[in-house]
Image 1: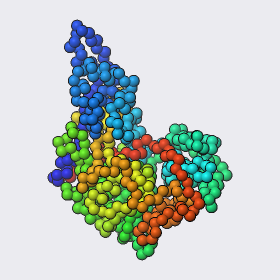
Image 2 (image 1 turned 90 degrees about the vertical axis):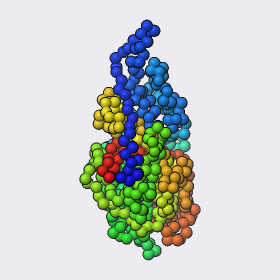
Image 3 (image 1 turned 180 degrees about the vertical axis):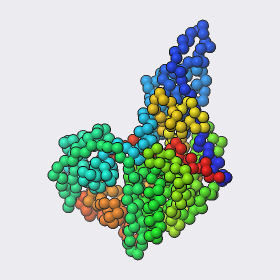
Amino acid sequence: MKNYLKKLTLVTLSVLAIGCSSDDVEVTQDNPADVSALEPENEISDFVWKAMNNWYFWQSSVNSLADTRDDDREAYVNYLNGFSSPESLFNSLKFGADDFSWYIDDIDTQLNAFRGITTSYGIEISTLVRYNDGIYAIVAYTVPGSPAADAGISRGDLIYKVDGEVMNDSNYRIINKLFQQQTISLGLGTIENGAFTAKPEDVTISSIQLSENPVHYSSVIEEAGKKIGYLVYNGFRGTYHSELNAVFGEFKAAGIDELILDLRYNGGGSVLTSALLGSMIDGSQPALQSNAIFADLRYNEKRNPENGLEFPFFDEVYLYDKITGSYLEGQEEPMNRLDNLSRLIVLTTSRTASASELIINGLRGVGMEVVTVGDKTTGKNEASITLVDAPDTNPEEAWTDVENRNPGHNVGLQPIVSRTFNGQGQSNYGDGFPPDVEFLEYSNLEGIKPFGDPNDQQLRTALNYITGLSAKSAALDSGTAAFKVATPQERPFQKEMYILPGELTPFKNLK
């Protein structure tokens, strides 16, 4: 067995969240022995503390997570019961620099979101801008077959009105109603020849449950004698590995010379999926070899002796059920790997985060030239896992055993548990990757075209870079320059990098 496989199996180490009795115990000075039998008033709080104590990346830096905290049972119980809610306890345990750990009210909702299943309108907003005297939300894209797409809303449309109220400098946060209510009315328009033109009628849509394929668009663009593969990829989801592999099969059959990976709206997702995508892009790396590392995840001091989990490059694609997320054993696909690319072009915005940034860092770590075109990325070099309260399971499976979790509640945690490094030990992108070629998408509202249109100004900037033409933005001459006002609220868990329960099951078969 390869050395990295020994490290991979260590991920099955788990949180043992001890179950709690609901029986009341009277403790008096005359009966001090009963202190050891005390239980917290809220068993969820006990789970929260134990899970964070075992897994949290910054455990040693948070005084309240010290291993001695629960040595005195009575003091421990009083400590837990001193918080107004388990969520307030969780928030108190977060390290000051941690902006990405989540308290989960409903595990099933989160896991569905990780698989691409959400209740939404199917509309993605890139940013809010001011143009002339108006405030507008830019539609980045709509999900095919969604209420938004069926209503005729498309990429590049501008939302200027929500539920009959025109957005302005003081009320523009009404755009967040997209994430807060089941039905919404939107006023839309476009910029033409420098002037905003509203569509004649507002559009009313209602949210539904959607399963979004993150492999949103792909094509082969032929320009200046080159075949350029172009892929819009909007989320690293393990349930769509086959669709991703199929696109690379098309690229391979077409004999592409260059690849543009559009991660403008990709906030991240599965670490394993990122490693598989990296393996498809750089097929020159030997598969399953400990000397070809795509990503090295390093945990806190107490997680395991080697304190790490290494992801190699792969030559097989692991498949997962789209509804349950379960590993489909025996249904692996041969991976379509490109072995002739010397560089990768990545389109970025400030929304490009976590597993998307892992692609950039991981491929640079093995010597591939990765050129970023766009805006500075988010800066998230940490990964999380889903922790559940499973007191009756084997300690080695507690954190993955979602089906056998405590039936008394549906709370879970998504804490940061590791930091990511590439094969050269580099992890210096906590503030984001600055662009190699700067282009701010919102700087040219008329330049936002359908995906794959070579006149889309950010894509055009990348194409010009490849063909050696000037990459200067056309926004300077367009007269439609806009200024960013704010980033709208995002869907929960949109900027995550994680390892899902059961996702590493395939590694048990690698011997």
